[in-house]
Length: 440
Image 1 (cartoon, rainbow, N blue to C red):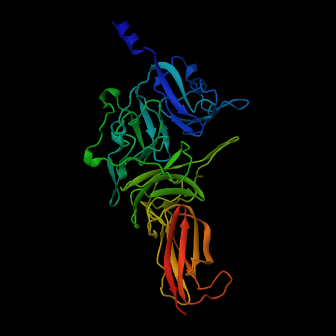
Image 2: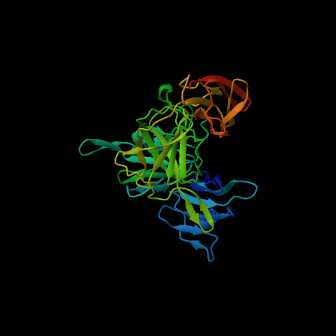
């Protein structure tokens, strides 16, 4: 009986990890390889033929493409996570690799408040982060009046995040109907930043809930994160979380928030009508001839708003909150509030030529017009017998509201006589005419 139980406990199992090329992947292992040699990082990642680099949170590297090969990591620590980067093949950006070994037993992991730790998932099925790390979300007082959670932030390589202080948890529930990507996923790695030092002990798998929907009650559900459509940026796999706590200027659903490092957009999201919201900013990196665009640590965080009302981009002031420093990579995250800025009138929904003002006029008048889309616009003045006497506008315009002045002169610069004149607008297939009266 004893022999049977031992054989059952140490039956070899497989772990399959899916990774994506041309970006940083944060991975971990939930199997204990059978031999010591198989625990070397070179063996663990040997199936990735285009692997360029693997890194742990101590700044040690494995660079298989160098001559000689650089392997500072050596034997893997199965408790932690590793960042890897590989180039895509012409046929696929996603690669799966499989490792065999014994079922990993959850253990302990020392954590302190000096850095982000890359941690692993020692389980065979997904579990809620809020169950696994329940001992890190106890609230401890800080003198004299504040209280803070041990766990400051937990995040993955896709920008999903758990920040207990702001009641944001898109790791356990990203607020869609699918639970397939919720919770701590075996094979994924995570970064954790804690407020206080501790020796964290992973709970045994037997006492943890399985990941199912719904996680939250209906009145607790938040709207899902929606990546920006207007602002263009690269998701590099290495996020830094920016918490937007509010805005002095009213944002409306459909407005978009862009995070910038200088002139480069490094992250963005569609405003869903709820605060606070967590937006990942993406760090860039260089490795040999490979350059992935993103922020550099220490760069100032700036924000732009694309308004769905006036369809314009606005540079906006921000105020950094909760003693965060306002630069990318500083501390665990940055919290900010958006200041005041002016939003223009809503874009028109149809073509239109307004009535000139004043009317009658002497010596000049203003003619308003509006277009709902980018168009070639032509405004022409005609006299009472239908002769063209002056072209005022003949150009391509973006959607918006415009006006043009007429000073009562013809195309040769001569003043025209008193009488009735007509202004014709042509834009796309739209044609419209208004009557004007000039009094001398």
